[in-house]
Image (cartoon, rainbow, N blue to C red):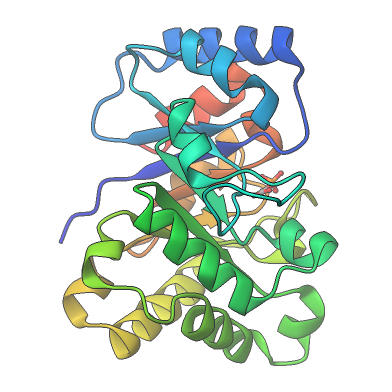
Length: 252
Ligand code: PEP
């Protein structure tokens, strides 16, 4: 089956309103002619509204970087999927390694978040990936298996209509050390196999698996050439319109 490439930019904790709007507006012009690739940008919450206005009517969708498991209530500092949708988001990133590492987000919490985001109508990019220590210790497959089986537990076929998995080896995130196309392919094929075992062959065949970790314009093409690499989740190189647009175009 041919899967539509999904390329998303995770801006993390960067860009005040001015640079955010400037970046989004520039990107809108640069990718205007791109069809056949789904493009998403995920800015910080405070600029979602302004960025949403800047990309209105374009082929770029808006996403949040995180959300909570409740619609509203006494949960200081949190944001709900409904609030993200209200400001124009159609996507949300769940389970980024920085959320797992710095904010203690567990497989169980991430499972709840993914289910609630899907039930609330948002599409989810669900992140998984091993640390260098885990890879070197021969734990990579076990870690990915745990993150998939617990993180995606109980999701329905319909949930998978709006769910992508982002394989992001922690050792490649923000380090400039990109996984080789072969390493990425091996992990992606393994993850697709896990989805097949846990869900079905049809879901495994359809689910998009993005690669994330030091993707740059000059390594995008080779990575995308691998059969199980269906797009990217890009951090640093997504902060500038020209480098993110070049990744989108080089991946075509
Ligand atoms: C990320 O944060 O998801 C990421 C992949 O970052 P970078 O592209 O900077 O490695």
